[in-house]
Length: 177
Image 1 (cartoon, helix red, strand yellow):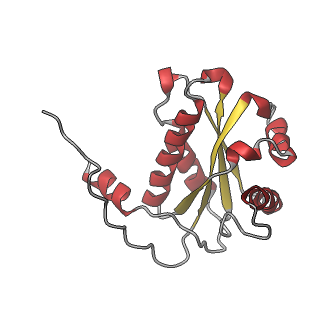
Image 2 (cartoon, helix red, strand yellow):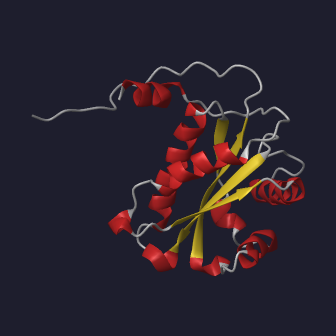
C-alpha cells in the first residue's frame, strides 16, 4: 500500500514532454489501469482511445485551442500520445462521465508509476461535437453521439523535473466516530 500511496502523492501534471515515443507495452499498461477502474454497477462505460498519430494529434490540438478560445496554443504541451476517454451513454447514462473520470485517474497514477508524465486535458465533452472527433469514433465503428466526452490525457516522458506538491489545504478532512 505504501508504494501506491507514494505514487499518488508524487504524481504531478506534466506540461512539457520529450520528443520521444512511448512503447506499445507501456501504453497498454496505462490503458489497462483505466480499464480496471471502478464503474457504476460494473457496466464499464469508459471507452479509451490511444492516439499516437502526429497529424491527428495536431488536428485535435487545433480543435482544443479553438474551444479554449486560444488559437495557436499547444493544448497538449507537445505530448507524443493523447488518450481520449469517453463514456458510453448506452452502457450507463447515469454514471458514464464519472466512470470515465475514474479511468483517467487510474491511468495518471499508472503512467507515473511507469516513469511517464501525464496531464488531464478537458474539452473532450465539447470536442465530440467536432468532425475530427466524430471521424475518430466512426473509424472505430462507433457513433460519437452515443458517448459523452470525459477528458484527454496528454502522455509522454516528462521534460525536466516534476514540481513539488503544493501544501494540502486545511479543512478538507473530517472524521465522525
